[in-house]
Length: 332
Image (cartoon, rainbow, N blue to C red; front, top):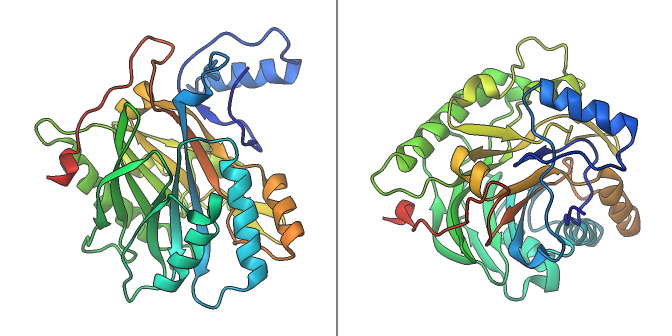
């Protein structure tokens, strides 16, 4: 009954509570009880025929994509994006590690429809790990640009978008890896979130924010699933996130070998307002689906798997809270 067309490779994070399906097996029941115990909510049930009211945001670290990308890698990206965005009428891509203008142009041509009808928001810098945001047909960009924040190595890219009755600010972010030194990632995250909270705290501000990307930090549960689970210096992202935001996606997304996943690095950090009003479901795109695309192409698309978030662009959540436009306050 859940109209989400991408596959999730492990339990995802959801927006609104609903009773368990009668057909759920025993393992699903225990998983639901465990999630409730940990404070997580079971899936919201989307009414049949509601797919037209939904949109999709995909985030993917495309591994230093530049002008020298091979045809096989381009094919792998195109097929992987096709699987991640399949069936979504309203589409947004937040990309990380876009090396330069040539890489951004290359990526745009791998989008559904060869990028026709899409808007590319990208600013090249001397950094080879730029961030970008691509918006598909039906999504308008109210403003966009790099955030030049002192102390953040890879400038986040921001766009305020409108899709149907929904508008929100998206940041595409890649925190420093620093050979696994989590303190570098934590320091940058705090700077970025200070900027986000300052914007959200302005009079009449749009309170809906999504910070998407590669954080090189795990969620509390994601650390348990990761190869780095015993690394005491690699603390959960929740410890540094602060109030008013929730970190989504617990599945490992950093690649291990050709098809495996090792560490939980990629997330959506969503504001409480977006969580309550617009979020439907978020999780990692099935590793099997991406691996299948790569086998078809004969190359690995990236050293990360993509993640995806489905949001309401109209209608109301299970509690009756309707999606409504707040205005592009961040553009002023």
